[in-house]
Amino acid sequence: MSQYRLNLFVSTEHARRLGELATKKGVSKSSIVAAALASWLSSDAGDQREVAIARRLDRLTRQYERLERDQAILIETVALYVRYYLTVTTPVPEAHQDAARAQGKARFTQFVEQLGRHLLRGHGLLRDVAEQVQPDTARREAAPAESMEGGTP
Image (tube, rainbow, N blue to C red; front, side):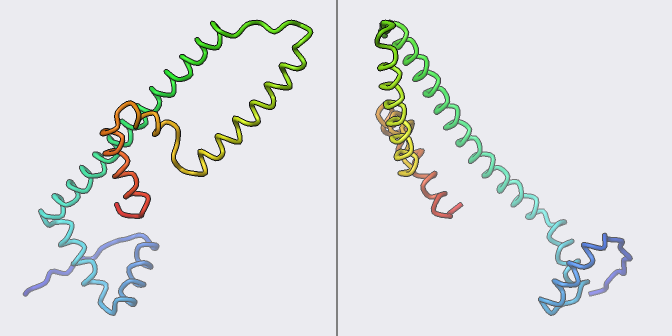
């Protein structure tokens, strides 16, 4: 096979890394550059990149849709709670305000502790709510997320 000589200009950093790789693999710098060029010019390489990008985009789309759903649940939850709180809660008389503040502080501490336990378990309330509302969809979406946590792409 005849070969064509090229004189290339690369950055100092690329030249250093190319030299290290050639030494490590025990091959010439020319063979590494030739293999990289062949891969770059191969029609399969473009197809492989396109498939990989499409896969990543699909995964990002699913993640975005879950975030969008979770955000909608959160917004609705807060809105319903605020409406309920504002319509049901009666004003506290002046004489009982100190006791109400103390009780509110104790309840908030209990809330923060419960939230901490939920977060440590790694199984959030939003997933529980989604599973109650749409059990099949929540299970299907949890499966890819759990496989991703295990290190499998």
